[in-house]
Amino acid sequence: MGFVLAATGSAIGLGNLWKFPFITWENNGGAFVLVYLMCIAAVGLPIMMAELLIGRSTQKSAVGALKEAVGPAWGLVGLWGVMCGFTLLSYYTVIAGWSLFYFAKTVTWSLSGFPAGLATGDLFGEQAGNGSLQLMLSFGFSIATVGVVYFGVQKGIERIARLFLPVLFVILVLMLISALGMSGSREALGFIFRPNFAELEPTSLLEALGHSFFTLSLGMGAMITYGSYISRGQSIVKASAIIVVLDTLIALIATVIMFSVIFSVAGMADDVSDTGTVGMLFISLPALFYSEVPFGRILGPLFYVLVALAALTSTMSLLEVVASYIIDEHGVGRRKATLMCGGVVFVFTVLAAVSFGAVPFITNLEVGGALGDLLFGGKVGWFSMADHFVSNWMLPTGGLAVTLAAGWFMTRQATESELMDGTEPGWFRYGVWRFFIRFVAPVAVAAIIVAVIFFGVDFS
Ligand code: PHE
Image (cartoon, rainbow, N blue to C red; front, side):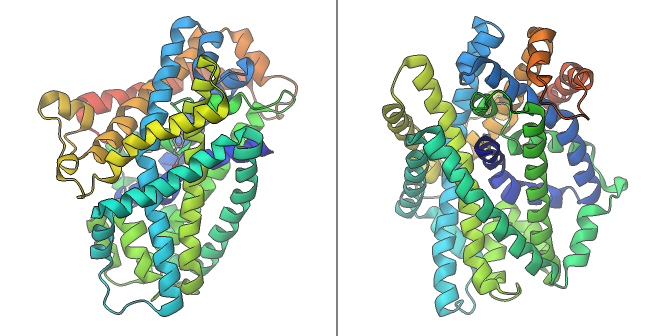
């Protein structure tokens, strides 16, 4: 149970609360949501099983596991995953830090009233551009992450997941109840669940695919590493299904909540389209808690607690990927390795933290030319470049490698014995999984990479 909660916590994160609602908005809801569900089932779930089985069969973290399960050269794929975890952690922490800022703000507003006429867009820009504030926030969040991983898998990671995940669910359900009571909830539900395929853009499918990697923490060794903590006698198939279903459920609930709010306020829909992803979570919502949302004075601060908890259970899995590599492959003790990795990652977190105006050189950083376009999508600023590279390059290539490893390079016997170990549920068919991991998943992931290279599709 501890393991399933930890892995679910890794999957549930800013991707669910921050990215998914926004891409659903951009892609006109309905049909996109359906396509997303298909991607999760056809590609996400099989790869989840693949990563967990590689981890459990070897009982090692990403690098060691791939070396042992597939072959020595595959250690490089594991290393690629470690680098991906490192990079993702470095900037994810910054957004996580914003949730601390908004928690503090909403507590103040709940106690002493929301300042009349406050422009939340300006407030957001000011806090993001305030270098010392950003350093403090992200440092605070890094300390929390290091603090958990420091105590190891059982006493740190699993304990925090056991403690926080239920809290997260409760807060989300409270918010859902409140949101369903709002006038815009019917429209929101229609937007999300009534498919209109005429509105579906061709790139939506790819966007859904790309997001399924991010949201399920796939393609970078996190689930391989967590898989190594599953005991024999536990079903990988069941665990994967639970993780995937819960992650999807949370993403949908978050979307219902946000859209109910948006559709309840006149003119809000246009605002959201203007301010983008950041806007929904950190610009629109803060004020709406005090004007629109029933019980908003209580739910406001709770909501940012939710964001912070969801982010923490993800950042700890990212740090665990990096730290467990150092622990397993370089024989460093857990405590020392955690502090070391946390420290080095934080150097890059600093760069991400000052990417929003605090340090002009970092804010305006750019790699020009064709290479810059290809690798970083012409993005400007350290934060955006890192996010672009991780979402468009690191996760898809890592994911492709894992599907090939499990589908083509490992023996049938090796994967079958892990999945069909007598604990698998009755509905599971090994042959179906094998077909998806050998053919469907690699083709789908390759399509992402082709889209990035040749069609300039952006998954960040
Ligand atoms: N799945 C997390 C989210 O949705 C992000 C993440 C990716 C975490 C990879 C760990 C590893 O926010």
